[in-house]
View 1 (cartoon, rainbow, N blue to C red):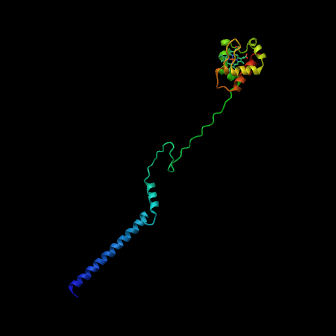
View 2: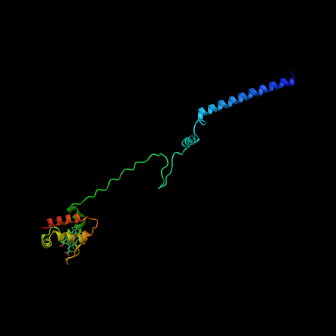
View 3: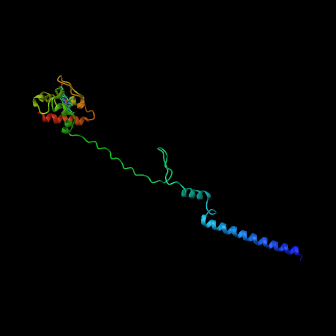
Length: 170
Ligand code: HEC
């Protein structure tokens, strides 16, 4: 065996051992990364979704009309209770809307409790009085504005006030 041949054998052996070591290191590192990061066994899309989830911002801004895109905590908005339509009683309506004129006789209004001023009016009948109170009336003495000028009163409320005024003025 020549010296060259010996050198070549030795050289091949060393190269071979190095290749084996390199392969072993490659396989070992691949195994490690598979265990720690799971890159090789998992779907890339799934991996990216996980990554996006880990690095997503803490808060997000939604403009009105935009759809919420992640499971952000929803704020419970307390349901506003429906406003209860309160119906005022006759005396309540009178004190609110009629007393200004009918308490004092202002503008010629027949005064509450003054039977003499009311007797002829009451004789017209409750329906006529209510109609005059609802729609406004002028009998030549003064001007009675429709619903006493308070258009937000319901018909029933004004009618209740008329009933009250009639009872009080007989
Ligand atoms: C701005 C003053 C004024 C207010 C407010 C007012 N009235 Fe009168 N009301 C009058 C006057 C004036 C008359 C008399 C009109 C006439 O006979 O010429 C009258 C007359 C009436 C009459 C008699 C109608 C008839 O046929 O003789 C009734 C009933 C009446 N008012 C009810 C009410 C009620 C109910 C309210 C409250 C919701 C009210 N009024 C608020 C001025 C007012």
